[in-house]
Length: 338
Ligand code: SF4
Ligand code: SF4
Image (cartoon, rainbow, N blue to C red; front, side, top):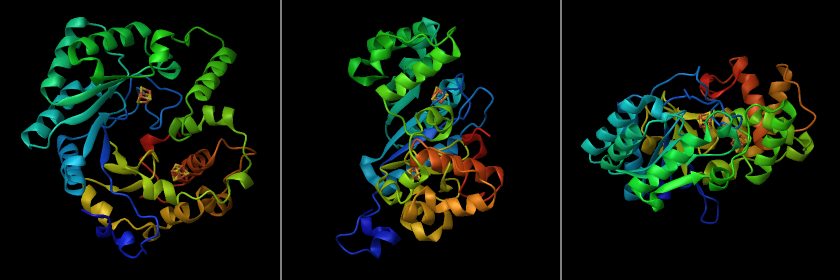
């Protein structure tokens, strides 16, 4: 498709910023995870649920191909996708059977990587099933839940089986020099969080809009007012899709643009027009401060300081979700810590 196939773009003049084509999608197999990282954009925990049906994954990939052709890229993530290894394999097989092509990336925290035989079998299977790259998350937030031995074992074996170039570690620095995150005081834990977000700045959405954002909060509401989200929404190169088919733009987790089980990504992209949805329109034109008056009227208490506009946005959305306002756009509830 080309840019003018989108209804919003078709009404713009040549110099206006266009709504970019979605070329990537991240499929969240589940909200369940063996970890509950403080910076998780999707608020995953061992208690969360959801398991993406094979049909949802296939529909997502097919419709992304209709949209982006051979530039379409899919990655599989979670939650922890290896908690549902069999479903992961079923999805990869279905992609092959449908002739959809390779999967760009599978992402894991490596908590399952204790048995070398299991690791070899799984990585070889993923390789046969067309997984191009393998990403292992490794940072202080993950190290609070996943032992460094498992992460190191998985990285070493993945590099042997798939080759160095196909293995990504986020971040190597912490694999070599892990940060002690267990059996330390609450104060030390806070300092380690702070250091980690200073080293690698996070977007304050999902659970990152909780403790971490409060620690980093140094901006007044007046500073955030006027920070629109038009560029974020127009410029997102792709979407994430949750286990229930809910589609989120870029990393704006918890703002539902549509459901891929009902409408393919190609149709959804064609029909996207910020003005059609009151909630999205407010974000587009005024940023999250555009939602503030309504939220305050309903009882939302404005904080003295925020870490940035995404912190404000996530905080207001969690409040609105609790009040069941904008139920079609603010969700899924598993994507929030309420
Ligand atoms: S960031 Fe990843 S590993 Fe951590 S809780 Fe979220 S999904 Fe699980
Ligand atoms: S403020 Fe909300 S809509 Fe805007 S970029 Fe952040 S999460 Fe996305």
